[in-house]
Length: 289
Image (tube, rainbow, N blue to C red; front, side, top):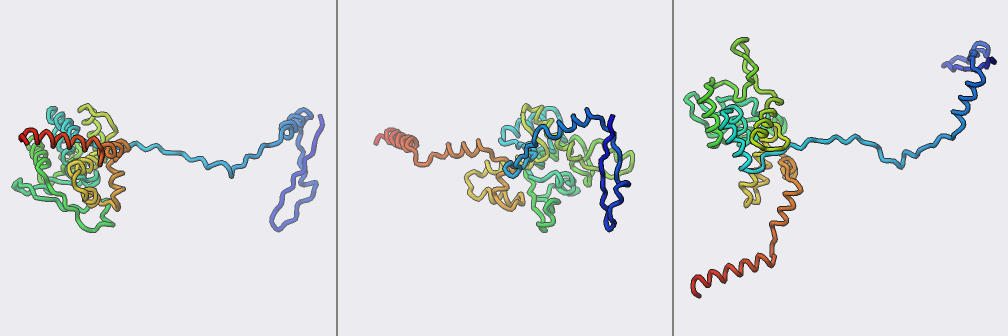
């Protein structure tokens, strides 16, 4: 067994290194251990990788795309199911959400007094300062109450009488009468679970949450006003977006929608001209000309 002494020097600020005798520390290694360390250290030259040529690795976060109820038939399918199963709160939640286009943060604060007076007569509109955009948009947004919303609220109150100042979407787990507390709204997760559960039970497959109702409003608004070239700008103002492109991206205009728009346009095609010519000939023959 041989003893090898390795010199270890420590540098300190403002002080010269200590004497060599004080800095030498014995390290007991046998010959075999030294040979193994030498072979591992110097048998292969280290391969240096040029990192400047490699792109930086990024962790891509996959986002779940929330879908709207794109057609009126899908909306009718859900409403029929909720009506048949007597889920009046869920029915009111979906109908109010898809007809107002509000976010969860605003829907959760709505009270019956926002929609009607003490005699049960509905107002024409709701004046609401949206929570998310209240710093940039200082003016109230006017939410007009249509027939579908009035029906949904009236049907719910017929089965579940409430006070005028009660929340529209109150948490059932909050027993405020027992603890003498104020009513609390449905939490965001429960709100989304109701929408997802209603869609599943109605036979719809997709990813749905609280944004589904707001997106459904936008999709069906554009379908109802497809002949109006200014409809997208109107929807942009309703949503409070800064550009129409943000509005289109938000409501989920997909590549298939763009493809169908191109294929259905067919401006100046010979087939359309031939069909129009045949229609004129048949009309002339019917008139005997």
